[in-house]
Image (cartoon, rainbow, N blue to C red):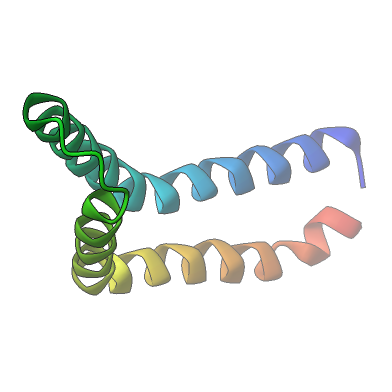
Length: 89
């Protein structure tokens, strides 16, 4: 196993991690920003006001995009398992 193979596998794993986390983080960031602006405008300082909508949005995103994320992970993992003989030998 050469260092190039280790770099490639590590890079692919990081790219998959970013692709899988971005659909969850970006909507949560947007909702948090909107609620923070609302809190600043109304001077309401309640921590649960940001938590509950973020939780709901993350649940909806996971419900909608979850199967695609799972398929992306399975494709990566199956490709990694399939390539093990070429990586070792």
